[in-house]
Length: 369
View 1 (cartoon, rainbow, N blue to C red):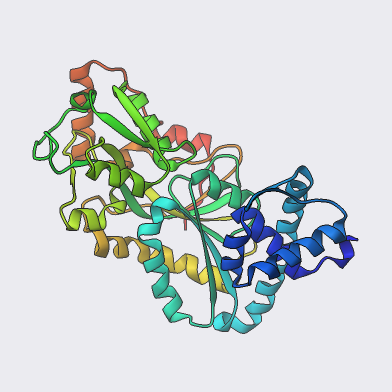
View 2 (cartoon, one colour):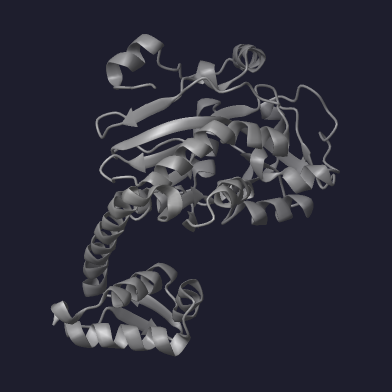
């Protein structure tokens, strides 16, 4: 019966459901594989129903498992909130924070959070990584305290703070014919093989929107599942890609790839730290959120240099009715905006105008601190 279910069994079940593997779940939980298997067996016996389909070593949730997973996550989230409420009585001497980040952020977020962890050695820190769709799922299920991501999603009630600018550039092999060229027109790249992230990735969303607005279609495209795979493919001469400048620290430092000087680029978005407005943040999560906001921008300058404008926004509240977007004029340097407008006139392509500040104010509610 369900009342015999233990907290540990719920933890093990959720870990296995996320990893789809007993091996990976046991590593994440620091348990032996037999211990994880035993917890699952006892849970399924207590519930009287199978929660997983077994495919060799791979596991997938059954229909019952999917439904139970949603409830288990809510139970664990409530227990976490209870713990954080008690930790408020102890200040930052204890507590835990679960942070989710998009895969593009993995090139700087662990180093940034290492500084925070060094200041608060008694805190427990857990980091989850995935693409944009994965992070939206974590937020929707209330499975994380904070999310570090690009553009906030529509349809979720989130409080978000933009803490740094986020440039995207075209990257090519060092032997590329345009590697040392200046003022490259986007349409000069139409015969190139374009390396794209998978659907569900924020980088893929940006690529699709940019190409659509510019009426640009590459001759050939290849989809890949990670930034690392794309970078390796670029170095192998397989193609070029429009990806985050913040993924290229080591590659540019060692001269392994080239950034193409395409007119109108970089495309500059913002990095955000976000949380579900319905999730009560404990003192540790609040302190981390403020730490990221106060230190994130300068930390990125330390790692990558200052080649984009400073950030000028504070906090947005994203409602299901309308999620705020960053105006295009604020996302690009004046020089880049002028060059893009000039290119559009030369190409004779129709562009999609950004909403004016007045229209944006009517369309969404924004609070700033």
